Length: 141
Image (tube, rainbow, N blue to C red):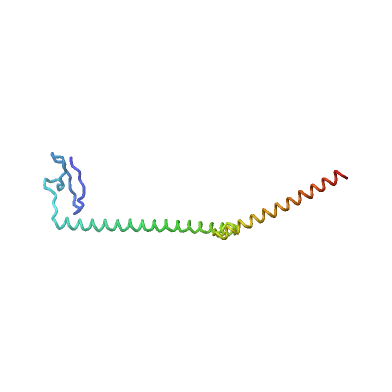
């Protein structure tokens, strides 16, 4: 039993027969003559195959470049939308968040807080004193 196909090199119909040693050998159809090619025919076929392979590789490279450029566009669009979100956030935040963290600015903040605490304590003491005086007036009166 043999397999009949067209030769990849010359296009002629050939039959592949399995030999006793397990390998297949190519014969001309309906004959016992081995199917042979000259070296020049084989070299031509190899050159054609190489050109086809290069063309396929170029097509694949082009497809990859197109896919890569599409991915780049998506990434750039995402980066742009993220930068817009950051700018919107930056506009909404107060100025206190972005104060300089230098030693001088920190000292000024500490001084302001201590002065505010002192002024608050004096106001509290005055309010307590006024309440005590009011309570004493109502008890005696």
